[in-house]
Amino acid sequence: MYSKLPIFILTLTALSFLASCDNFERRFYEKIDQGQLNAIQNGSDTFDLATITDFEWDSVILIRGNESVPYFKEEIEAFLHHQKNEVHWVYKTTDLPINRDRFYFLTPDKKIIEKEIKSGITKHRPAFDLVYCSTDSNNKRFWLSKNECKFILTSNSRKAGQGTVFMYPACTNPPSKQEEPNSWTVNEYNKDGLRIDITNHQMENFSIHISRKNETLNLDLNALHIPFKTPGVTWVNKDFVCISTWWSGPQARNLFIPLGKQLKAYIYIDKDIEWADSTTNNVLYVDTVLNDQVHLVLENLKSRKKNLISYPLNPEWPLDTYYDSLQLTKKKLTIWTDGKPSSFRMKM
Image (cartoon, rainbow, N blue to C red):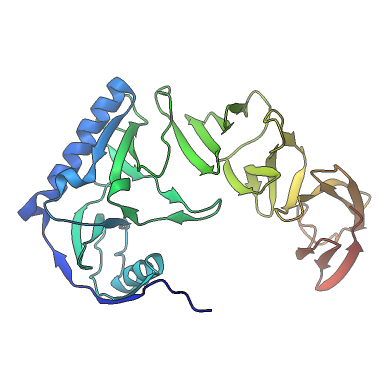
């Protein structure tokens, strides 16, 4: 059955106004600079994007330029078309020069107004970073409605003119507390009452904050002796949260948070994890490499049942390379080595 939602075929006209004429860039960065000062003093500040525009608009998207090569118009047009897929776009823009950012405002009469500014990453201090809305555990939404552009501003530096100002739209939740200097918190997940924030403590430690209704779970990776690079949420299902804390090639170290009746525990398997499957809650990891044999374990996170799998190690391969590829289903594990498959039946 075809969708009954209206589809608009639009010819969008770019109405570009230079910053030198309407002072959009100046007003925008004045808000960022003052917002950082207020955030340093009070923990956060507010910024309504509509207060610096002199035209009506319904939604906006920010395209960020590169430092070394232009962002070509064909790439921008394809990205805009993909992000606004309820509208058939017939819209042409221009290349975005290096060290420039560009706002695309969609007006009520379905026109586009472009506002270009110097790069908020490389050409202005403090830098600014826009936190996007999540559509699910793996995807973000880049268009923001006018109401969502009432930002909460926070700063990861206690010194004005340094660090980064984070812009949290109304569809996200900013950190609730003021952090120590040079640390910052990123909201990794926020859906159906479950929120996951990860705080970077000057790259010397990471802490993970999980909340659900009136429950909270805080995990300090240094205190738990868990290795890390830059932790992030890998997936969330109805049973578990999977957070990757460290990785190298196909191998990783993961934290698993059970989403049972109480939010109070975590599972950490101190092994090189080769596969963590969100559909079956099965985890495959290297147990030992001994006597020219690789010994793998396939463990189910809910039942904690294990399957032991062993196969010969190729002595000509590097020490940490055990196979060409893996294929894991609910009932079978297939390991490809030297172009040949070996299959193992699973009993979980």
